[in-house]
Image (tube, rainbow, N blue to C red; front, side, top):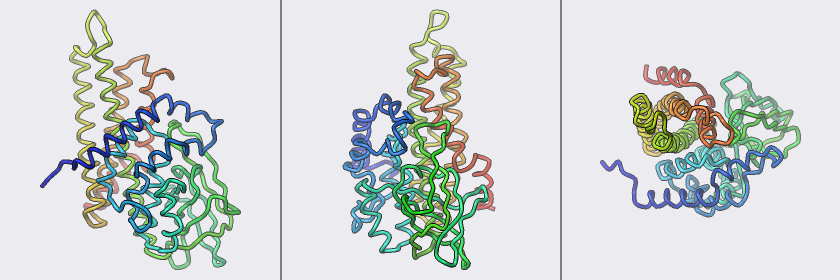
Length: 362
């Protein structure tokens, strides 16, 4: 078996890294955090460039304008976005929304939305079933009402794919962001590189999609979760690099702090967490493409469980090694810390994922 990425996949990774280094350095990321820029601030020339590279259409079938590729092909590109703490709505749109529509298989909905997602002109978000108990209902008149909370990139989206309950069971609807009765409220979180919003629907007219709603949302949930973990791989990898550079340069008692055994042990623990998390993420990406729904869900849950704990520890350890400078707004390390803290909190804690994993296995 060949566990290495292909030459084409490596070249794609290199292209994305060069592009983001040139067009979206950390100075760009900081500028995007200006609240006066509005929720659609990230949909700019950088976003268009990612679409031109072909990233936004990688999971979309060729007959809808995409590349018809898989999560393994996209894995390295997602990692590069994490290394750059890129603030755009990529995972929610190009992974979550694209997957939900493709798996559901409603031809009209796919023809309407997927070409725009592939070219980056349309941005989608997925409002799936909420673990906090909030529910959205499909009424007999065909309208939907309810609330969804903490929806990733909802303030940025043109189209929302919404999970709802009907008299006959779970259904999936597509709702335009400018629909009457729909209110999207941006919310402030600790990580300003991510956009979240609460959605309130009051008798909103949506398009009921054909297909297996449960299967489509489960696939979208798993792939979106894996995409965020892959993003976390890149962020944690960059945190380790920055920490090692600092440990070599920062001197205490006349020698680099990296020469102290205590610091070496911390860095070794960080490396272990990065590599184990990378292995779990890459396997989960493969499982999204090459196995059945049960193994895909198990692999995605396992990767999320490890990342929620392990990657956060990488970031927290980095702050400890950086010391006082790591707490300052001027230093870049806190951007990565908040990115990985969000990965730990969004979609459930490590304990939640481990409980889900136990239910799958047992």
